[in-house]
Image (cartoon, rainbow over all chains, first blue to last red; front, side, top):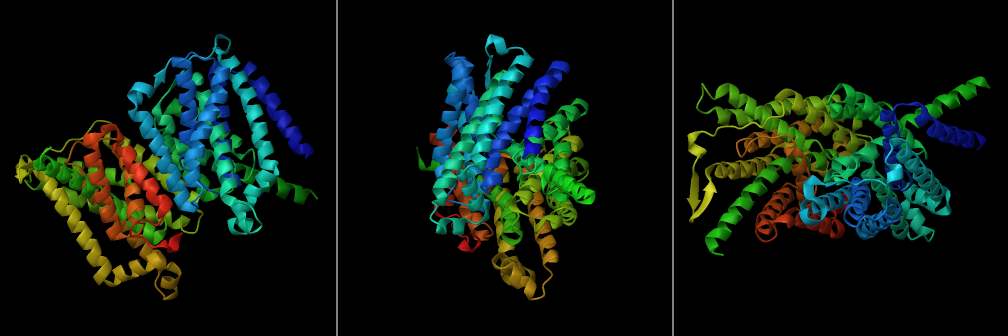
Length: 309
Length: 295
């Protein structure tokens, strides 16, 4: 317990201090890591805790991004108001679409989430007058005080810590343990009187809301949004990050996001063939580190500890 | 709106359905037998189209039938690549979790997509059609691209050939049995890995062949695979995984729905297809012609 508190404390100190000493480019990368990590953490509620694979999670991320983008560009609302509204719109979409998704399991769950994700993508893509179609929305400028990369980073960090803490509490609550029970054996969970579908639906909505929050942070970060944010290819990113970091650890998605985003920043500096590199990494990770980076680290630490005794 | 017009629209939907069938047939077969959902299927299909272009490019100055040779050649090359992928990669993930299998084939789309970019560049590739398929033909007064007749024939040929393979050959029977129960098939002493390699190779052969057929329809461009893979998923979901007749019917449904809805609500054509797919998944996840045993 104490070790974990120490690690969290250490991480937060690093997150606060590091951006003061590195170049602006890396501050951007840090913001990107946190936004992706929040996206992947919300995905992991469905994947790691509930045991279902969503391949359409980018839809809620995209809805959040577009809500904030549209409200800021067309209604000139301040960013701080847009964030909760984005969570609500993404939550509403997750309520409607999730109602159907939680009736299915396994591969069918994956395909239905993907089909709904593409549905959202095509609606945004085709609705030129409202969403700007494939041009996306430009000129999503954060408020004056957050225009500087460092300031926006600290803003993202604060949102991330709050959201991460809430997600952690959800995972450790009776609700979170019910989800684990559903993951391990849905039938037995049903037998002890738990309405499995309702729990899955609630979890789906929460995951959608936090994905929406992550999306809402993304638009002002790069000053624009594009329909590709909702595409199924984008849904693969949190899946990869989570598995890279370790799906059965709360910090797995964060670690995955750190590795993924750093690698991407470095590799894209040398070559335009980032998909080739990331695809190769995915295959190597799945084949050789099935429990993710944290799983391996955990094993190593345990081994050292046993040997030490 | 007269009958001729509706008939013309029907024909274009039919052709689109056949294109979809050619892409989805292998996808459905591979999922039905191996239980692996191949995200990379359409990327392999696109690679087949590029190979067809390359062969045509080498041959067309010396041979008048260059295109007709290039299409099956593309299928054969892709079959080799498919066998290679199965032996090197897919074989390692038979017993893995669903998400690991999906991630591996997702990674394959990324890798193959970039390989296509490296080998063929980013410019569109256009095959000049031979004279016989340059002019449209008229069927009951409705104009039809004469190449589309070939596309339809090829689709029907693949459907019939696959059906005969499943119905009359020993291997076909094994494949059909494996769709129902792999454990039983292997208990009967049939080497499952060999069957898997064969099925995957056959599936990718059809994908490559379909890519070759796609190539002369328009130009071959990067990213074509991304939109068609989702439609192929829709086809397979509607028809039922692992069912040949289901895939055929599903393709025609999607093709015709697309072709007719584009008349009345052009922006909503894809949306409508997703709604149908979602509806089928919710009320009958195993599809119109599938078997519910896999739920």
